[in-house]
Length: 248
Image (cartoon, rainbow, N blue to C red; front, side, top):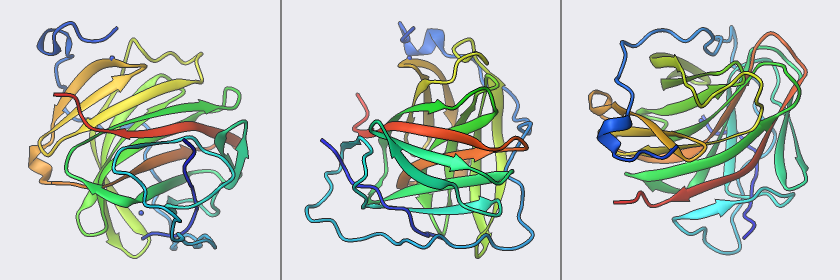
C-alpha cells in the first residue's frame, strides 16, 4: 500500500541463532570519522509543511514512496541547501548539491515507546553517502540515529537540539561490520528501539545490541536521515520505509 510523503520544516539479521551467542560485544564509544558539521547560521527552511491526510495512518505501516506526499516533515542540521526531492521508480530520491549536508525526515503520525524500523537504501555511484534510521525523536529530549555509510562503517549517534536549528551530537559507537562492504551501494537496515536497548540489523541479520538506558529516551517519533560530505553531487534513494511491532 502506497503511503504519503511531504517535505517540510520541523525543528527535526545470517540471523542470530541465539541472540546472546552471536551478538558482538559492545565497544568503548569513539567519535565517528565524520559527523554533522555545525552550521554557522541556521539552515534555510524548506518551503513545504505537512498536510492532513484523507485517512489516518495506521500505527504499523510500510511507506513505498511515490509522488503523493503527506505525513512527513524535514529539516537540516548542517548544510547550505536542502537536497532536491524527487521520485524515481517508486523510490524517494534525495539529490544533494551542497557539501556537508545532514538531512532528516520525520514521520509525524505516531509516537512509539517501542518499534522496529526497516528501510531499503541505495546510492548513486561510488561517492560517500550516509543513510540511516531515526527513533525516539522529540524536540525536547532529542533522538537516536543508526547510520551506515557506503565506506563500510556504521554508527549510533544521540542528537539533541541546543538552539533553534542547531543540534549537537554525542557519538555512541562507530564501527565496521562484516555485513558492510565498500563496494556495495544497496542495503536493507533495521533497528528495534526499546526504552533501554537498541537492536541493530543489516540485511535482516541481527548483529549487535546496545544498552541505551542512560539516555532516558522513553519514546518518540520515527524517521530517516541522509548525509553527504565533501564530494557532491550525490544522490541517495529510499526504496521503502517500514514500521512494525517488535517480535517477542
